[in-house]
Structures are given as structure tokens and as C-alpha cells.
Length: 245
Image 1 (tube, rainbow, N blue to C red):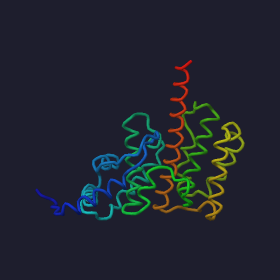
Image 2: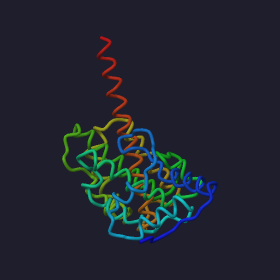
Image 3: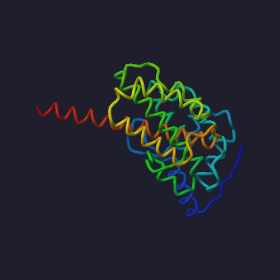
Image 4: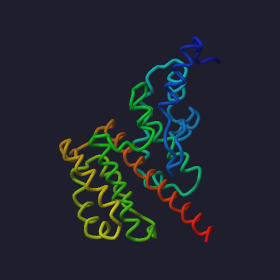
């Protein structure tokens, strides 16, 4: 049975595919160079429970129609700590695809699609800044305890991504007393920088709707990938230094 027939000119197809690939272009969770996510990977990450998801994504990729709202399902999936911190390669691929789905949903066809492939230090969106801050506080917790933790502040992701104003007070108090003093100058400066930007845009939001929760997810993901990339670079430098001695 033929369920749908798409007729499109080559010029329009090329333009639509370009926008789609740019929309899903995203840095890897471990900070590797950004790359786009195909339709199949998006569907696999989100699950095939919505029969209209594949059709909607194909229409976006081939015809240039707006991305399906079903992509916002990734917001709910990311509240699971096991999804945010997977234990195997397949899990990391799924995480990459889920956040790419949100990026496509938020920025398809917009100028921001290219810039938001990785960390944007200049972005003053309060939800994005809140997501970045949670990643910084989690990194401070990890460094203070020498990366020996099995559970981190990522367990508070759900509350922080929906009600930042009610959640970050306690997280900042904990980090200021227990983690940041041991985490180094870089992370303390990052906290000050993000809090300063948040002050400029009115402070922590009381609640976040779905669109802002997607921004929060991007901020958290981008900042985490940035830390992991720096960690890998330092390991490489140490290995090179050790080999030259």
C-alpha cells in the first residue's frame, strides 16, 4: 500500500535537505566534531509509537515543512538520568539523536541552527543559561570527588529543567560549600559568568514551558560536551608529554 507520495523539484529537495541537516547538526556528547543525525536515528531514539513521526520527518527533510511537534517527546525522555548518562555506545548515540531532535524542533530554518551546533557562550536565553549552570555544578561535583561518583546532580535534572527558581538555590548552596572550593578556578569563574548573564535577563525563570525546557536541554548538553572535549584534550596532551620524556 502506498501511504504517501512526495513530488518535489531537485532544487527544492536540495534546499530542504540542507536545512534539515543543518537543523540536526550537533556536537557529539563527548565533544567530538558536530555532525547531522538522519531520520532513521531520530525515529529510533524517540521510539516508533507515533506513526506520524516518520511521515512528518520525511516531509521536513524532502519538502521543507515544519518539523513535527512529536519531536518534543525528547524533553520527557531526557528527564531519565539513565538516558542523560548512558553506559554504552548505543546509549550515547541515542542521547545525541534526542538532543538533535530538540535542536531541529527549535531552530529549523532559523539563523540559530548553525550557531547552536555547539556551546554558545553569548546566548542570553535564561533557560539555556540554567541548563549550562546545572552542567557546571555537576562538573564541579565530579572534580571535587575525583570522578568517583556513580550518581551526580543529573538526578535533579527534572526539577531544574521545569522549575529553575525553586531548584537552583539549594544546588548553589551545596556546590558553594562542598564542591566549588575544590573544583578549581575555571569552574568558579564559569558559575560567576553564567549567574551574571542570568542577572542581566531577569534571573532564574520560575517555570519553563516545553520550548524553554528544550533550550535548557541544549544548554546542559552543550556545556557537558565542552567539558568532556577539554578533558579528552588534556588526556591527549598528557599522553604526548609522557611519550616524549
